[in-house]
Amino acid sequence: MGTNYYRIPKASELEKKKERLKAMIDSMSTTPGDVERAFRYIDNPEDEWSQLNPWDAFIEGTSIHLGKRSSGWKFCWNFHNNKYYSNKDELIEFINGGRVVDEYGEEILPSVFMQMAFSWGEPDGLVADKEYFDTTEHHRWMSNPEDYYDREIDGLRVSSSTEFS
Image 1 (cartoon, rainbow, N blue to C red):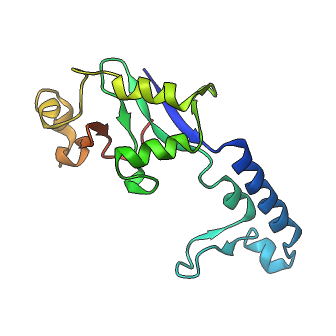
Image 2 (cartoon, rainbow, N blue to C red):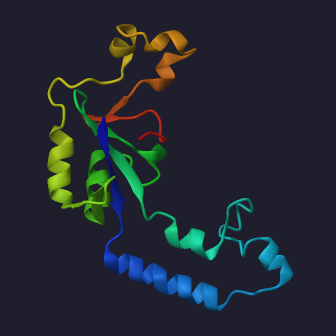
C-alpha cells in the first residue's frame, strides 16, 4: 500500500482559468454542429486531433501526478515523459509553483512534501531495476522487462511508466 501525491494549481491560477472558462462558455455557439461535437474546438491548429471543449481546457493540468511513496521502496517520481519537468531543478520549480495534495485530498506544504519525498526509502529502499527484476518472479511474464526498469534522474527514482498509482 502506498500514497500518491499530486500538484494542483494555486487558487489564483484556478481563478484565472475559471474566468477563461466563463468567457469561453459565454462565447459558445449552440449550433447543431457545435452540440454534436460536444462544443469541442481545435486548441492547436497544428494538431487537428487535439480538440478540447471548455471544460477540458479548464481541467487540463489541474491535477498532475507527482509520484508515489510505498513502504520499503524509494519514492517513485512520475516525469510524464518530460512534459512538465525533465530534471530535479525543474521538478522543484514546478512543485513550488503550485500546491501539493495527497490522494486523500490533504494539502501538504511543498517544502514538507519535498523533504519527505527526497528522503523516502533512502538509502536502501527498493528500486525496480535489473537487479530487482532478476531476483523476483516479475520478469517471467514480461517479454521485455527492461522496458519496466525505473530510471534515475538527478538521483531520483523515476518510473518508466506515466500511468501508475
